[in-house]
Image 1 (tube, rainbow, N blue to C red):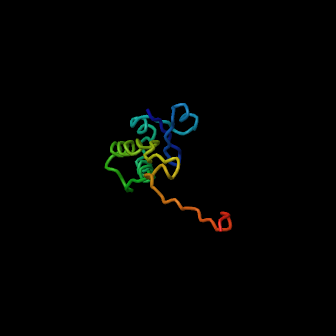
Image 2 (cartoon, rainbow, N blue to C red):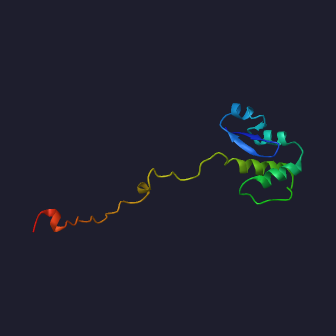
Image 3 (cartoon, rainbow, N blue to C red):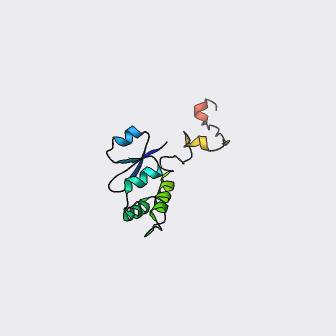
Length: 115
């Protein structure tokens, strides 16, 4: 289960363990209910948190507190996941092999010892 912290500036961070999260000194939560309890009745803060999340459409208000916490909880579930494709070890790993022509060495007559 993911464990999150929320700082006083509304920055939400995902942690690898609950212990690591507690060590930050920020508010710790691991469920939507815990998140709602941690935020309390501050609807303005919920709007600030939502608008601070990456990739979301900003809002000016939510219909109600429950829908706000639900939307924020759903949005932060992707935190900490790596969605990038694996990077090849060398540039040549990514492409199919290509047969390149091999140049024949040109030797001058003087170098070959032939007249």
